[in-house]
Image (cartoon, rainbow, N blue to C red):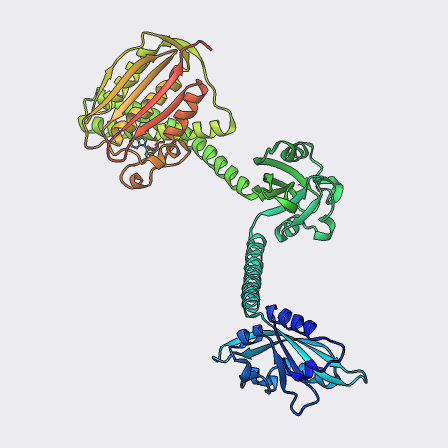
Length: 510
Ligand code: ADP
């Protein structure tokens, strides 16, 4: 041990050996510098210091501690150390030091002054601890934190952008949107709502929906009932038509959809109400309906007169045996019949629309109805043979004329849409308590996507519109007639492979 340590008068040699053993057992590096000698050389180092730095004792003793810093001088910790030494104070710093082999390590360095009886600083004790691993872990952590923070910033930006994007959609939408809470208070509305109802958002937000606007324009019991039912029973509604007088915008026909907002947290228990104004659309539809109805009525009278006169002239030509005139009138009669069918179909459409179509129910033999309809169509068809199979032997209750109309429609279609074929099959059967007719053709067939739509008014499958004449109402009228008989009408078909049109009617008397 260094002399200056042995000089302490109060310590006996046994104690000193004990202290030295203790210091050598420490895992922290310990050095002592002499503050009274020039350049404050190291006068003691323990084993851990040798291990920590890789230097031998003889390379350490007599040196100033700065050799540990190698060339890495530009460190704030150095100023701190210098300052502490100057003021004779304790300090703790983390400083980059270098081992003998040049490897850098982070040194957690504690420096404490030792004073003599006069209060002069005679020594400094330095305790070193290699904290490189901790530093690396801290660095990793800091990097991870930085990365996470960047991700948070990125995500926030994404969310902000997506919110702005969605808000812009909501604002552009030509539908009024309202969000209400469980107490029916309005939380938000889009711009369209304010514009459409001529209300300012401050008149609406926070108000109970049924109280907004003038004279309780939203106080509609039926709507109230529907809305109040949404949250407790998760009972959304769609297509609720509402005709109402709104003081600032007049009478409007609206379609309302509403459902619970399916989000958790602070957005739950909210209702999104979407309001579409269909006033104009309905008016246009109505005008179209009216036009069809008026036009077909107006055409009926002159057509009846033309038909009557042609029949008279046809008879006269027959009497005169004038074959040329007879042929001409015969052709004209056929065209008149087609036109008449079209007009009656159109009249039926408007009657169905206005609910004015009438049915006259009687009891009759079902097989006979089919046979008569088939023979009627057969008489007008040279290209196809219509073959009936099966029978029901049953009397049903129905509107004979209307059911005959359905059969004629289906048979005419089967012939029309199978120009390359020469047969249409008609199968009649009794299935459970129903009578069933299946009309099979081997014609152009119908794509799956159109199987439902062909029963809509004026709908015609796209690929046939140019090749075949027609207006797309026969199946609509037929399906309404079958519906009135509590039966079903449907098609089974594949494009290019022919079609089977089926209907069933319950046998039970009405
Ligand atoms: P229209 O024949 O005047 O177009 P319909 O209401 O009778 O009107 O038929 C609607 C549409 O259904 C037709 O335009 C056609 O696309 C399709 N369709 C009806 N019957 C057949 C059939 N037998 N084969 C193929 N397509 C058919």
